[in-house]
Image (cartoon, rainbow, N blue to C red; front, side, top):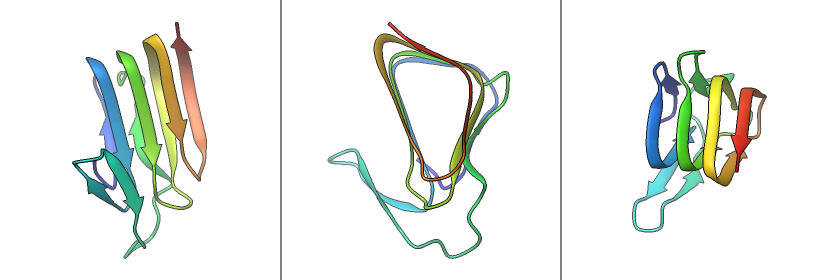
Length: 99
């Protein structure tokens, strides 16, 4: 959970949840509420290089900030078939798969 997230290495786990953008995060519910940004909106709130691959049973990538997007050049593989991606801005994905 951060306004800007950079994924520069492989990430593995059972569940991966990335929440980017100006937001207030409720740890009890796991939900994020968008806040008004205090400075310029980034083009990509979540930015992954070619080395930033993700593999998990469940992957959830959410950008709450209006106009901010997601760029993941690396592979995204959701082994249990649960891959969720939500953003108001640009979305650029390399390879994504779910079983």
